[in-house]
Image (cartoon, rainbow over the protein chains, first blue to last red):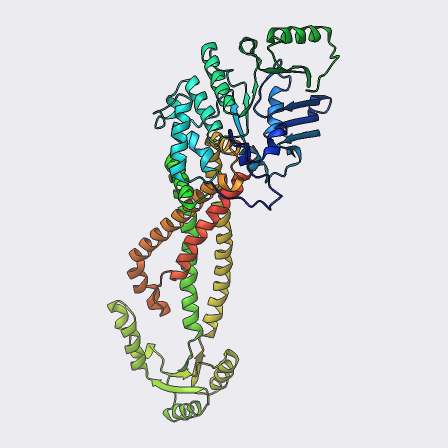
Length: 281
Length: 293
């Protein structure tokens, strides 16, 4: 792995201590990995996409983000990986306000994130190996290590021995596994999954969800955005629901709150047109 | 990013966009060929100007039937000037013989009588004789009654100098035009390639690639295109030059007294490296808009 200058405060460096299973700094382990405070995002001046959104995500959590299409789920994730910048508020990732990062620092932020999309975003004319290896090559990792890490990760996502295949020859589910492999191969602190099962049939969707859960079990925090109620109803992870730019419902420990309850509660509120209790988690 | 990885990625890009790049290289080669041709013409014109500018000859044409005594007196006076290194008297017969020797003329012209060629005094001046001083000498010599005309060759030189000035301006404008052309063609080629590989760039940016990491292979590809185009143009120009050199030597060189020469090696290196540099710049400029992911 490349060495970094710890004195250079202009750039957010990769946080090796946030790798799954590695806790070099005990105090870091006690801080929430992600905190959003009063976040506003406007794409149209008269209609904010996110309005005063508050959210705290603890290390190692698996969080479902749900809500209707256009509610702001993707925007939330895009603000975290800095595709967009907040208009107001703060987003603290590992204690740093990523909303204030300079454009030069953004790559270093993203090296701590794994991002998976609905449309896979894998390079079709590359091989499976190349699609996964690029994440490590960006880190200047020696080729020998790249090879071993990629092979190991492909085994982990169920694509062992498929490294030489051209990605365009894979099925949708397999392509999404490639995307997951690329997201986890660097062992990031946080994985953002933006409707990763949206293009998959229900059976494959469960497979992919299980894959994310396995990644989460190794200590990686996962934020999984989906509007697929059937998917979240099968699991008891924490759920937040975004509606009209706010976290209108949020519950911890779904062992006591079922997904169905939350969804029906959200539906009731949507019917009344009132958001009585935007909840900061 | 290490160099090996950079080259590997650039090679992959070149392989994947081979047809697009071949078209671009051939278009650019034509542009570089125009520039190279202009430089070649300029080089040879400069060589002629240099040769003629350094020419310290003066020819004094004598009147028909000039008295030998007058000619001898004139010669003695000219030889007495500090700037004069040598004086040679050419009779009409000598002038005819010299013309026939240096010119590749038909038999008809060879039949011309000696009277057609005026007798002359061929004067060699010191190399450092300035144009004004030479003009004053010529003026003084022209006043002699045995002198019909004095040729200093300076008029030809000044006409060539103005031609060269124009040539340099044209070559400069052409160089600018070619540079813009190369920027545009490489920019468009890379833009096309980038558009086709937008997903690749997006993936890299999402994985935390810096702009330099993403840009590196594209800049290398652009630079390679520019270099190959310039090299191809140089090779074509050299081939063309070798084909016509003998012909040029037999015609133009006989008139000007200067043999045709190819571009100086430094100019060749400058052309190819300049091509590579312009290619790299064009590539970097065209990538800017795709970097915002």
